[in-house]
Image 1 (tube, helix red, strand yellow):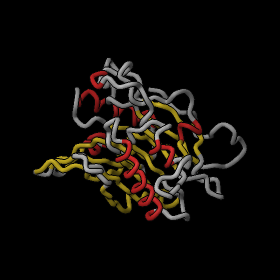
Image 2 (tube, rainbow, N blue to C red):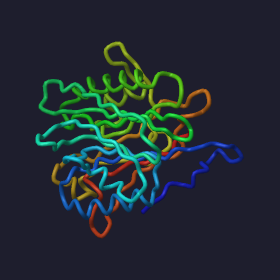
Image 3 (cartoon, rainbow, N blue to C red):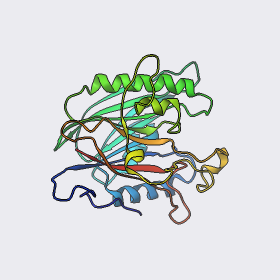
Length: 280
């Protein structure tokens, strides 16, 4: 399994700087060979040792979630936020794995734009040694022609992030499967490159600022689990951070695509993941 560089990032020799390692992965619920995929995901997380993990397409059954299965024995705290209820205590949603205790949890439903999809954002306050980290995980509508719905959703996401994490304390981190390319209106809005309905915000796209190459995270050419969708390879999974602030907290230091190679012929998911190091 591929590792990021050691935690003393390039360009900061001689300076004391704490870093946070953040991973995002859409785990593709229980589709495909789940038991084999679970082993690949757990091995990757053990090897990469992220501090915070945001997961999408997580199945909950009464009293247990796929996030709990992933975290078992790895020492992570978990939280789950429902997006789509299926009935009888079964649902689909987003989840957080945290190296440190999760002090609070909130779930915000996102606009559906009249579609039949239910999407949400999970917000957790993480009690880290650096202070409280505002951590958000989301998953937007997936259909290629639903950009206008995703535009509504990112505006709600941005409003909730600002309300939960005003410009004080540690910069908020937002991760997830946005189902939108970097040049889309949705992502351009989040990264401060265009306004929507007279509003503008700014988050740093960690891979854009600190990664290399195209950063493709959904690739039906390389990943057999994504092949069935016949979609063009593209980058749709992100780690964002609102920073850096005046103390240089929230600066992307390194980023790369992960889970992009099979283990014994099995990929972790139909998506690849993204891991980033952020100053804190």
